[in-house]
Picture (cartoon, rainbow, N blue to C red):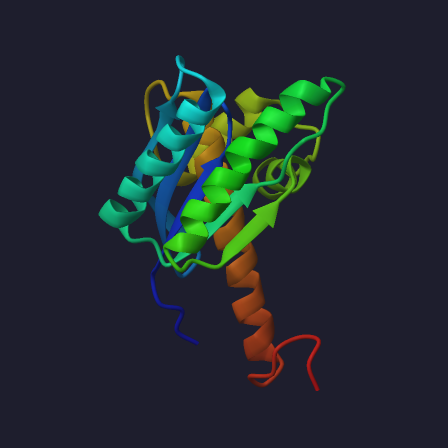
Length: 176
């Protein structure tokens, strides 16, 4: 079974900092292509959302990922924060869709579980595993490491689907 290399972008949406991470995954191994964050520290909410859309569109053009993954909104007690985060996520989803990408969505607990084995892992544990899995050194913004974690989770899920489809004789799970 041959699994071709695939470029994946992971997005950790935020209204002030939207993390992105681009990896290339092949045969269960991944390497980082790029990572960082789009910072929108000033301006009105519409101005910050437009900045996220524009910068994300430029990143998609530059790195040409084949697949995308984004974190689902974590709803906390602060409804206003959740609404603004949802707006940033919506802008990111639109930019991904406008590039013609199918988008996989993962809950924070799924990402933590995939990378650390615990859905309750702390951010620093996730960041440590990102560095180990991608053989990275040095400091990294948590938004960028979270985005890389989302991309790594997607690579892991797509790899498992490919292996199970192959074991099923080319049939996709859930189909007759």
